[in-house]
Length: 635
Image 1 (tube, rainbow, N blue to C red):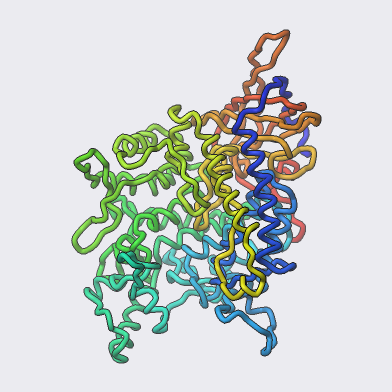
Image 2: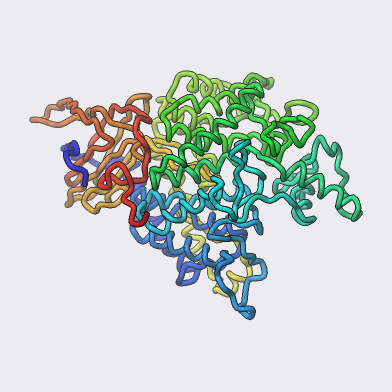
């Protein structure tokens, strides 16, 4: 344990606030639900009964490492690691299978060297979803030897270090295809893949399923006919165009690879991972600046924008004219900006996202009722898809900068909102945007009940999931035969927001962002001690307000408070109150450290206000008792 850590003792005894009781109950409910899900929907070794693409299978069992790092029981981490390892063994081509071994009819081997091969959705939109669990294990136990080796091996696949996976071109600073992984980039499509990506399937009502659209070949093919694949000659021609236009070059979605590299850095502190993140991110930032502040969505094999699309900057896969256009454009770029800021402390990287938001807002229109509408996609007819816009990406920029410029952008969106109440909280899982509008209003002083509402909504969602599992009367054979997506009762977005004062990790492969994080000093483990609840009630550019409550009536708890998810911030001083002869006394003590300790006697609570310098320390998965770096069991 780090010596000479500043220690503060709570003294006030009072009735615990409602948010603290709900927070405690929510964690306990998820612990029970994790056990029930493991027993009901998987084998004893952690292998799931359901079979999907491997990214979906990982995704259906995600966030257990983060839940443990918030304060859940060790059993949650044990189950999470067991399931991840079992899924990895199940899908990896290194496992020898007997020819007569029964397999689910939908099963396909989709991993090589424990990472995605090209037999499934090997793009960063999907790989990022699947990687969430793996990233969270670093928060839970950064000394796990196998996961350290995996982090380095996976990163090597995108650094031109793995001869089996030549995904990165360091000369042109591109990832060479939208599809890639442990066996390298994909440059050639078969008819099945091309149909999946060119021919949309529609739900009733005309809503497209998936990411297919015929305009993926535009402008090389301006109007692809519906039955192009029925004529063998035409099909062969389209496949060649598809290879050249769609598969031969980089797209912004690949910026999510920066999280994979940052994950390796947080384990190892090796500068090469940091250099790669900055090199790749800055290459895309240069392209964005040259494109009037909006990110181009396709780059050719020699690093030129629009190289395979007759010079057109838009039209790439997952790009600005795709079904999810604006979401996909911002998703991976935001991950990259967050990682670059984390690794350098340079707030200039936030301009990567800010410039694009400002560009789109410059094109905004106001509806008759006053609703602000922002374009979301571009076609040959110009910018289209005008819709009300939430703050999913802008909230992250503002959380990082805490600057007036980003605040004013959010305030403009709020002033132009007519359809939604920014104080309301939805009951939804981790895939949703996370009610960041309600969170923003709380810290802006206009939504005081948000912590309680946020935790209540999360509790309601998990309870419904728990009751579904408890009442599920299907036997194992039925579960396997029906092959439904299994329930995942781990929902962490609200509890992350409330306890750590930050937006939740970006669902498609982002790393944790936290203003503060907690460790149990007595048990030498990450997370809030049992029976302790936390709330970040104030956020400013140079300070944070924290409430800590000990719900235990007989035992003292000792909490280490860390500045940042990875110790990237530095506390300078802490203010708090003590009671002396029924008088409240204001205390200010210097800290000058990433950490301080709070002693919570039975039934006590305390409010602290920590002054801090943000993004001034090199980040690491290291725990307070490790020092500045993770102790490596093997090098």
